[in-house]
Amino acid sequence: MTIGPANSTPSGSDNASPSLWQRWNNLPVWSQIIVGMTLGLIVGACLGPQAQQLKPIGTLFVNAIKMLIVPLVFCSLVVGVTSMENTTKMGRIGLKTMAFYILTTAIAITLGLLFGYIIEPGANLNLVAQQPAAAQETPSLVNTIIDLIPQNPVQSMAKGDILQIIIFALALGIALTATGEKGKPAIAVFAGLAEAMYKLTGIVMKFAPYGVFGLMAWLAGAYGLDVLLPLLKVIVAVYIACLLHLYGFYAICLKSLGKLSPVRFFKVVFDAQIIAFTTSSSAGTLPVSLRCSQRLGAPMSTSSFILPLGATINMDGTALYQGVTALFVAQAYGVDLETADYLTIIATATLASIGTAGIPGGGLIMLTLVLTTVGLPVEGVALIAGIDRILDMARTTVNITGDIMVNILVSKSEGELDLDVFEGSKKADIAA
Image 1 (cartoon, rainbow, N blue to C red):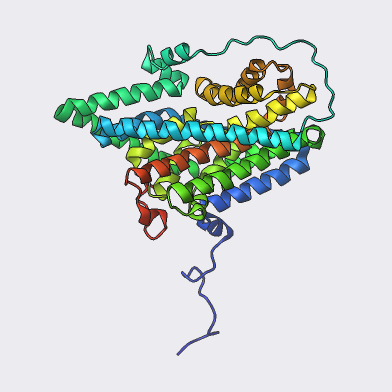
Image 2 (image 1 turned 45 degrees about the horizontal axis):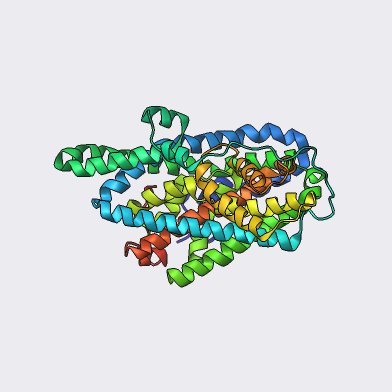
């Protein structure tokens, strides 16, 4: 016998509707990040310059992400090399990876030049150079190679010099593998540390929506239409070219080279793209890129080798940005470029993406290098500097997506990609 209304729900029962906080926590991380980004833009637009007071929220999140970079890169690379147990295989994967990175970077800057030529963002500005382009000290190939070897690995870690950390981690991993049985206890320690870093990454990612909210509120408050409108054509050209490179060229690579679904790929990497877009840091997005690669079926043995390398030297988005902005400066100052100049820009930006990797403000440094190489006014960099943060968001998104795509294609070529995980019919084993 039932007493009271048949549809009544006792207080505190399991059938009680979830609270707003519970529903928020039940949302996937990418949905929470989208909400945080949208609310940040709205709040920043409403508060104006006062919204910059919210930047510390985003800075805390970025600092937490940066905290993970060095130990995560170092431990995951050591584990990745030791898990291969075959230096021949590592060399083969390294050659494939470098070939992919150089090819996609060259295509990216060519696409940027094409869009700069079609849209003509600097046409009719009629600027006059105050001084000729000054010669810039550019990193030579010899110096770049010499600087790869750290004199003090601990100091390199303290400075966050990713290239030197990668070289030391690779050398240590090879040495531990060659040591045999005596090296296994050390390998186990690094494996445990790597797992702990993956776990810590998951914890930090729970705060991503709030960090993204703070960053987007600051961005919307700091940059208004007064700054954006005069250079809107540059922004439009870069963003359209980036979207085409992402969802056109990368989709073709996945479909033609890997026989893989681009839709599934872009659905999974969306988390990493949002973090890259809001933080503008390829290295800072590395922990999320590793998780996305696992969710796509790539083994940690290849991911922990390819992704840190890509976060350091793969600059598809940055190279694309060089093409658009170099033509913008040339058009703004009325300089006609010859075919040889276009080829020089392609070669310089492709090679400089390795030489200037890991340097703060690397995009502007690379642009200065490209401008001086073809004799364009260096002061044109000042025109781009005002919107560089907005452009950096798009180019970083392209950079990290290219890293993950190359990782997936190389893993597939090695027969190590779990196709069931990639297709979503089986879940990846990821540390929560």
